Image (cartoon, rainbow, N blue to C red; front, side, top):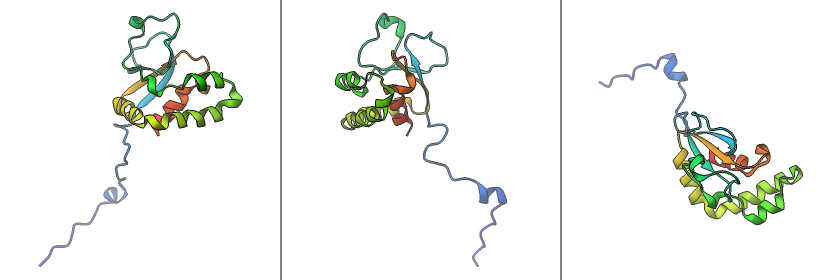
Length: 140
């Protein structure tokens, strides 16, 4: 004679199924200017500018990665010029530039998975920068 399965408790019925992106695998990514003082809780330090920042030595920056392939092209950077009215179009063009580099984007995602990371840039307007767009792509 077959046994009836045990009844589920109320907590078992309402328990959530694990999501694909759990809290342990989701990265925390901040954006910071390279000229700001380094803090202990930055985690991985990733330079996201194509050009090396002026007045900063390589020894003082102490980077974990510098993925130049994931930075905007010189033409796109010069066209944009951090004009707020061009940001939406800049985002679209930057996404298009990154399409051939999905493998590099995935490599960077794997590097920061489940870790704290800080994207470093020399840009003054952080919310209107490529670093902001890149962070959105990395956390999507």
